[in-house]
Image 1 (cartoon, rainbow, N blue to C red):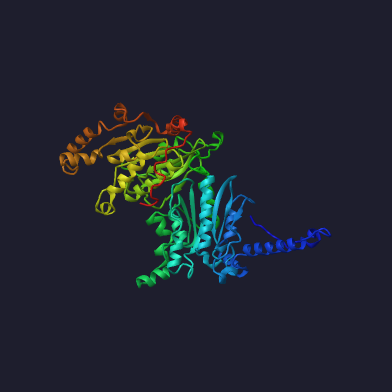
Image 2 (image 1 turned 45 degrees about the vertical axis):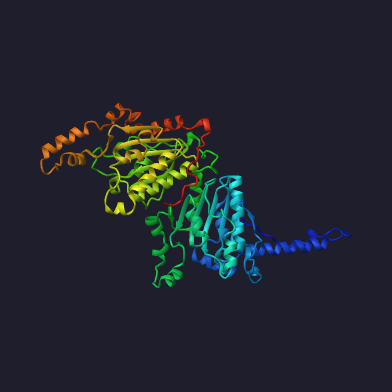
Length: 533
């Protein structure tokens, strides 16, 4: 970016002798240069020095690091507060907005400037954001929020007149997913920074940052108790409990790099296919390692994330919400250079049994992929849904139905591979039957209404410790018709494959089901789906 403006050079810019009005233009240009310098100085040298000492980038440095060099075009640089008393102390009115490029593709950016009135929200800077949102939607650009804000500006936001003005944009927080939205939580995020974060398709949070409705101080006063900021809105809360955060990093620079990487998998807008890399550049992992990664004994656990890395293009897996709903894995990757969304059960956590958090995680991911034309790959090894009192208290049936609703509305290509177990309703939710364009089963796959071991106890009332020989006999009988070959015989799967054939089957399947009649663009029935359920 950084724009620099020097005072006009009188020797170079002097008007020709006798030209009327030249000195007036010089004075006007000098005033413009002065106002631009004031805007670029942000909150002043002392405040910028304090940020540098804290190890955090300022609002303009963040834009510099995020965007391709020299590509930023600012809009609203000379905006200031509507209050006459604040006009000299509110350069750019605390929010730097404009457009630029990432890897040559145009994006829109809002960068909050904490050195100016704590990046607080005001009538003017909300107008800046509103206009930039309109520009991004009309022109098909991703919208990036570099969040850090103290919330609404007081006293500007007090009183009935301010409240009436605040409600003048009825679409301010409405998402139809015309373009991707991305948020970085890089400091205290209150007010609009929080709201836009909750509406975004991807959220990265720096350790030490904060995201909440109100600050710890305001919350403490409101409830009459001392509140720990980390417990109220720290990274562990949002990465592990609320699921609002997709990735956690240690610095501003890491967060900006994560944004660039995330956007590399997505199209610029909903009317385009995701960008692809040349297939010749895709490095296939060693397929033979899949046999080592997945134990044949169904009672043994393993880490599905390693299996994913053993299938997709080398180094391309971008895990999302890894600390939340850990019985499921969601993330972006590439197969032969093409962007795909990965949804997988993970036996490393809860044996791969899907709980309400895992269902929420998968549902949100399906919404994003469907909205932006990203094909889905299911990798399945699950005993079903986690049962118990805690799950019912968390409305497990509703989350299970939300998930299958999303699967069945999802109009992008969907492929499913059953590795070992696929039992009960989870068989349907994880792309089984007609819920995928094609389904394959490893030779080790097993599919049934329930695990045969549990089925013996349910059907016959026998536990293994009561009569081991009888139990094993009944279990073998129940398991006889659950194999991959039995499933293929009933055309429940279209292919039975060896683990080493998984990547080739997926690459061929994605080529077959790429929706060429529609240019690869889906129907986007979930584009207005709530961002948090």
